[in-house]
Length: 109
Length: 126
Image (cartoon, rainbow over all chains, first blue to last red; front, side, top):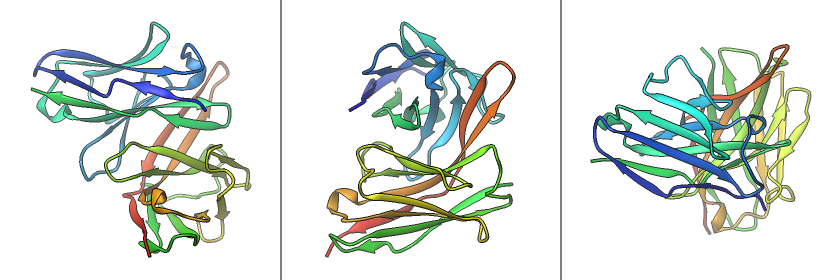
């Protein structure tokens, strides 16, 4: 069974920079996994942030960026704002099916 | 703009079949670039991809749920549906429907998931 692993929790100070990662149990994550990143706040549906590794939606704030880093997909927030406190999920493609990571709870403190 | 709305019973008995429908408004379900999917989230837990369907009827399922899941599409009603059989308490979750867009240029393809429905809570209990 394929497992996608994210950091369970991270803490960052306002204005700081933080990188969330997304690893695959099958090996290095590449662009062919079409990494997607979502933000979810309590009581809300997930909101798409990044697609296919590094592409932003029109509503994605400029401080969010996606990349591949050390064999993992990565989501970097630069200049973190209090409203960025949320759960973040990555999603990877496995030839017909998709697997979510377990999520990273980001605390802005 | 395109909107998705889940509907169906909020309470299902153990061993019975969970049935949900997602209604697509503001656009056609029969686009060659779109796949229509279901995702769920147990209370306090993470997201799980259940499966998706193309308007032609081609389906893709989570291997761990494949034996119990059926996703179907009704293009005349602009709807797609989820059936999950033999449910247990572990199937209690918020169920979301979402569109996946597949865009391919001459050099690469891109996939994104938007929009999502607001989600509907289904509780499995006697």
